[in-house]
Length: 264
Ligand code: KIV
Ligand code: NA
Image (tube, rainbow, N blue to C red; front, side):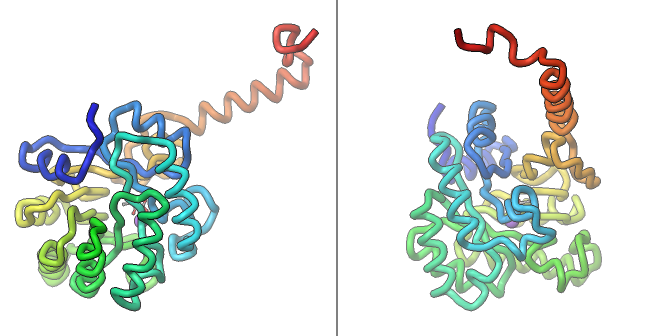
Protein backbone atom coordinates (compact mmCIF):
# COMPACT_ATOMS: atom_id res chain seq x y z
CA UNK A 1 0.00 0.00 0.00
CA UNK A 2 1.04 3.56 -0.73
CA UNK A 3 3.07 5.75 1.58
CA UNK A 4 0.76 7.66 3.94
CA UNK A 5 0.95 11.41 3.62
CA UNK A 6 -0.89 14.23 5.32
CA UNK A 7 -3.25 14.55 2.36
CA UNK A 8 -4.44 10.98 3.02
CA UNK A 9 -5.52 12.00 6.53
CA UNK A 10 -7.31 15.01 5.06
CA UNK A 11 -9.00 12.69 2.55
CA UNK A 12 -9.98 10.28 5.34
CA UNK A 13 -11.73 13.14 7.12
CA UNK A 14 -13.53 14.13 3.92
CA UNK A 15 -14.65 10.52 3.40
CA UNK A 16 -15.67 10.01 7.04
CA UNK A 17 -13.16 7.11 7.36
CA UNK A 18 -11.54 7.15 10.83
CA UNK A 19 -7.77 6.56 10.82
CA UNK A 20 -5.49 5.36 13.56
CA UNK A 21 -2.30 6.58 15.17
CA UNK A 22 -0.18 4.74 17.74
CA UNK A 23 2.87 5.92 19.56
CA UNK A 24 6.08 4.13 18.61
CA UNK A 25 9.59 4.48 19.95
CA UNK A 26 11.48 1.44 18.69
CA UNK A 27 12.10 -0.73 15.67
CA UNK A 28 10.05 -3.86 16.37
CA UNK A 29 6.93 -2.15 17.66
CA UNK A 30 7.02 0.32 14.77
CA UNK A 31 7.31 -2.53 12.23
CA UNK A 32 4.44 -4.42 13.84
CA UNK A 33 2.20 -1.37 13.64
CA UNK A 34 3.21 -0.77 10.03
CA UNK A 35 2.36 -4.39 9.19
CA UNK A 36 -1.00 -3.93 10.95
CA UNK A 37 -1.78 -1.02 8.63
CA UNK A 38 -1.70 1.71 11.27
CA UNK A 39 -1.62 4.89 9.26
CA UNK A 40 0.41 7.17 11.50
CA UNK A 41 3.10 6.66 14.15
CA UNK A 42 3.72 9.25 16.83
CA UNK A 43 7.13 9.37 18.42
CA UNK A 44 5.57 10.95 21.48
CA UNK A 45 7.41 12.68 24.28
CA UNK A 46 5.56 10.00 26.26
CA UNK A 47 8.75 8.02 25.54
CA UNK A 48 10.00 9.67 28.72
CA UNK A 49 7.30 8.07 30.86
CA UNK A 50 6.75 4.80 28.96
CA UNK A 51 10.34 3.84 28.13
CA UNK A 52 12.66 5.99 30.22
CA UNK A 53 10.89 5.72 33.57
CA UNK A 54 10.18 9.39 34.21
CA UNK A 55 6.97 10.39 35.98
CA UNK A 56 6.17 13.26 33.58
CA UNK A 57 6.83 14.15 29.95
CA UNK A 58 8.38 17.40 31.21
CA UNK A 59 11.53 15.29 31.75
CA UNK A 60 11.75 14.18 28.12
CA UNK A 61 14.59 15.99 26.32
CA UNK A 62 15.11 17.08 22.73
CA UNK A 63 17.97 14.58 22.51
CA UNK A 64 15.57 11.81 23.61
CA UNK A 65 13.22 12.86 20.82
CA UNK A 66 16.02 12.81 18.22
CA UNK A 67 17.16 9.35 19.32
CA UNK A 68 13.74 7.68 19.25
CA UNK A 69 12.53 9.55 16.16
CA UNK A 70 15.54 8.18 14.33
CA UNK A 71 14.82 4.65 15.52
CA UNK A 72 11.22 4.74 14.26
CA UNK A 73 11.98 6.58 11.02
CA UNK A 74 14.67 4.02 10.08
CA UNK A 75 12.29 1.14 10.75
CA UNK A 76 9.21 1.89 8.63
CA UNK A 77 8.39 3.24 5.20
CA UNK A 78 4.60 3.45 4.93
CA UNK A 79 3.16 5.18 8.03
CA UNK A 80 3.39 8.93 8.49
CA UNK A 81 5.98 9.55 11.23
CA UNK A 82 5.16 12.44 13.57
CA UNK A 83 7.51 13.55 16.38
CA UNK A 84 6.77 15.67 19.44
CA UNK A 85 8.63 18.86 20.16
CA UNK A 86 9.85 18.31 23.73
CA UNK A 87 8.93 20.55 26.65
CA UNK A 88 11.16 23.63 26.60
CA UNK A 89 12.05 23.46 22.91
CA UNK A 90 9.43 25.82 21.46
CA UNK A 91 7.76 27.92 24.18
CA UNK A 92 10.32 30.76 23.97
CA UNK A 93 9.41 31.61 20.39
CA UNK A 94 9.34 30.80 16.68
CA UNK A 95 13.12 30.73 16.21
CA UNK A 96 13.54 28.11 18.92
CA UNK A 97 10.63 26.07 17.58
CA UNK A 98 12.08 26.17 14.06
CA UNK A 99 15.58 25.16 15.15
CA UNK A 100 14.31 22.13 17.06
CA UNK A 101 11.72 21.28 14.40
CA UNK A 102 14.43 21.22 11.72
CA UNK A 103 16.47 18.79 13.83
CA UNK A 104 13.46 16.47 14.26
CA UNK A 105 12.94 16.46 10.50
CA UNK A 106 16.63 15.70 9.99
CA UNK A 107 16.16 12.77 12.38
CA UNK A 108 13.33 11.44 10.20
CA UNK A 109 10.11 13.15 11.33
CA UNK A 110 7.65 13.98 8.56
CA UNK A 111 5.66 16.31 10.81
CA UNK A 112 6.10 17.68 14.32
CA UNK A 113 3.57 18.16 17.13
CA UNK A 114 3.50 20.81 19.82
CA UNK A 115 1.11 21.53 22.68
CA UNK A 116 -1.02 24.62 23.11
CA UNK A 117 -3.44 26.94 21.34
CA UNK A 118 -3.35 30.57 20.19
CA UNK A 119 -0.20 31.22 22.23
CA UNK A 120 1.86 28.92 19.97
CA UNK A 121 0.41 30.20 16.66
CA UNK A 122 3.65 32.13 15.84
CA UNK A 123 5.66 28.92 16.34
CA UNK A 124 3.26 26.98 14.08
CA UNK A 125 3.58 29.66 11.39
CA UNK A 126 7.39 29.61 11.48
CA UNK A 127 7.50 25.82 11.14
CA UNK A 128 4.89 25.70 8.36
CA UNK A 129 6.66 28.48 6.42
CA UNK A 130 9.84 26.40 6.61
CA UNK A 131 8.06 23.43 5.04
CA UNK A 132 7.55 21.48 8.25
CA UNK A 133 3.99 20.22 8.76
CA UNK A 134 2.70 20.76 12.30
CA UNK A 135 0.12 18.98 14.43
CA UNK A 136 -1.50 20.85 17.32
CA UNK A 137 -2.45 19.32 20.67
CA UNK A 138 -5.31 20.72 22.78
CA UNK A 139 -7.34 19.71 25.82
CA UNK A 140 -5.18 18.06 28.46
CA UNK A 141 -1.64 18.96 27.43
CA UNK A 142 0.73 16.77 29.47
CA UNK A 143 3.67 19.19 29.35
CA UNK A 144 1.48 21.58 31.40
CA UNK A 145 0.52 18.90 33.95
CA UNK A 146 1.64 21.10 36.82
CA UNK A 147 -0.33 24.20 35.87
CA UNK A 148 -3.36 22.02 34.99
CA UNK A 149 -3.20 20.39 38.47
CA UNK A 150 -2.96 16.83 37.17
CA UNK A 151 -4.54 14.64 34.50
CA UNK A 152 -7.99 16.16 34.17
CA UNK A 153 -10.64 16.37 31.48
CA UNK A 154 -10.50 19.85 29.91
CA UNK A 155 -13.27 22.03 28.49
CA UNK A 156 -15.99 20.81 30.84
CA UNK A 157 -17.23 24.31 31.71
CA UNK A 158 -18.52 26.85 29.23
CA UNK A 159 -15.44 29.08 29.40
CA UNK A 160 -13.08 26.13 28.94
CA UNK A 161 -15.11 24.82 26.00
CA UNK A 162 -15.19 28.24 24.37
CA UNK A 163 -11.42 28.59 24.76
CA UNK A 164 -10.71 25.13 23.35
CA UNK A 165 -12.91 25.87 20.35
CA UNK A 166 -11.14 29.22 19.78
CA UNK A 167 -7.71 27.59 20.15
CA UNK A 168 -8.60 24.98 17.52
CA UNK A 169 -9.57 27.74 15.09
CA UNK A 170 -6.37 29.68 15.92
CA UNK A 171 -4.24 26.60 15.22
CA UNK A 172 -6.06 25.99 11.94
CA UNK A 173 -5.53 29.63 10.97
CA UNK A 174 -1.81 29.26 11.78
CA UNK A 175 -1.59 26.31 9.40
CA UNK A 176 -1.66 23.06 11.39
CA UNK A 177 -2.30 19.84 9.46
CA UNK A 178 -4.21 18.11 12.29
CA UNK A 179 -5.10 18.61 15.94
CA UNK A 180 -4.81 16.06 18.77
CA UNK A 181 -7.62 16.40 21.32
CA UNK A 182 -6.75 14.81 24.68
CA UNK A 183 -9.20 14.30 27.57
CA UNK A 184 -12.03 16.36 26.11
CA UNK A 185 -15.77 15.68 26.56
CA UNK A 186 -17.04 13.72 23.54
CA UNK A 187 -19.65 16.33 22.62
CA UNK A 188 -17.07 19.15 22.60
CA UNK A 189 -14.61 17.05 20.57
CA UNK A 190 -17.38 16.33 18.04
CA UNK A 191 -18.21 20.03 17.82
CA UNK A 192 -14.57 21.01 17.27
CA UNK A 193 -14.14 18.19 14.72
CA UNK A 194 -17.06 19.60 12.74
CA UNK A 195 -15.82 23.19 13.10
CA UNK A 196 -12.30 22.69 11.70
CA UNK A 197 -11.34 21.57 8.20
CA UNK A 198 -8.25 19.71 9.40
CA UNK A 199 -8.49 16.22 10.95
CA UNK A 200 -8.81 15.85 14.71
CA UNK A 201 -7.14 12.91 16.45
CA UNK A 202 -8.69 11.97 19.76
CA UNK A 203 -7.38 10.35 22.93
CA UNK A 204 -10.02 10.30 25.59
CA UNK A 205 -12.09 12.53 23.30
CA UNK A 206 -14.92 10.24 22.21
CA UNK A 207 -15.77 8.47 18.95
CA UNK A 208 -16.45 11.45 16.67
CA UNK A 209 -12.85 12.56 16.09
CA UNK A 210 -11.44 11.94 12.61
CA UNK A 211 -8.74 9.68 14.00
CA UNK A 212 -7.76 8.06 17.30
CA UNK A 213 -4.42 7.80 19.05
CA UNK A 214 -3.25 5.68 21.99
CA UNK A 215 0.06 5.10 23.70
CA UNK A 216 0.97 1.67 22.35
CA UNK A 217 1.89 0.11 25.69
CA UNK A 218 -1.60 1.04 26.96
CA UNK A 219 -3.26 -0.28 23.78
CA UNK A 220 -1.43 -3.61 24.08
CA UNK A 221 -1.82 -4.06 27.85
CA UNK A 222 1.90 -3.80 28.58
CA UNK A 223 1.78 -0.75 30.85
CA UNK A 224 -1.19 -1.94 32.87
CA UNK A 225 -2.56 1.63 32.70
CA UNK A 226 -6.34 1.44 32.80
CA UNK A 227 -7.61 5.00 32.34
CA UNK A 228 -11.28 5.21 31.39
CA UNK A 229 -10.40 6.08 27.80
CA UNK A 230 -7.97 3.16 27.36
CA UNK A 231 -8.86 -0.21 25.92
CA UNK A 232 -6.21 -2.91 26.23
CA UNK A 233 -6.44 -4.97 23.02
CA UNK A 234 -3.98 -7.57 24.36
CA UNK A 235 -2.34 -8.66 27.61
CA UNK A 236 1.26 -8.15 26.63
CA UNK A 237 2.39 -7.73 30.22
CA UNK A 238 0.82 -11.06 31.19
CA UNK A 239 2.24 -12.78 28.12
CA UNK A 240 5.73 -11.34 28.63
CA UNK A 241 5.72 -12.29 32.30
CA UNK A 242 4.54 -15.81 31.45
CA UNK A 243 7.33 -16.23 28.89
CA UNK A 244 9.99 -14.91 31.27
CA UNK A 245 8.77 -17.16 34.09
CA UNK A 246 8.84 -20.23 31.81
CA UNK A 247 12.30 -19.33 30.55
CA UNK A 248 13.53 -18.99 34.13
CA UNK A 249 11.95 -22.30 35.13
CA UNK A 250 13.44 -24.18 32.16
CA UNK A 251 16.89 -22.74 32.84
CA UNK A 252 16.54 -23.85 36.48
CA UNK A 253 15.62 -27.41 35.40
CA UNK A 254 18.24 -27.58 32.61
CA UNK A 255 15.30 -28.10 30.22
CA UNK A 256 16.54 -25.14 28.20
CA UNK A 257 18.80 -25.09 26.27
CA UNK A 258 18.24 -28.60 24.90
CA UNK A 259 20.36 -30.52 22.38
CA UNK A 260 18.45 -28.80 19.56
CA UNK A 261 19.70 -25.44 20.79
CA UNK A 262 23.28 -26.59 21.26
CA UNK A 263 26.27 -26.89 18.91
CA UNK A 264 28.12 -30.16 18.37
O1 KIV B 1 3.32 11.80 23.71
C1 KIV B 1 2.26 11.21 23.40
O2 KIV B 1 2.14 9.98 23.50
C2 KIV B 1 1.14 12.01 22.92
C3 KIV B 1 -0.15 11.31 22.61
C4 KIV B 1 -0.76 10.69 23.79
C5 KIV B 1 -1.09 12.17 21.87
O3 KIV B 1 1.29 13.19 22.79
NA1 NA C 1 3.13 14.06 23.64
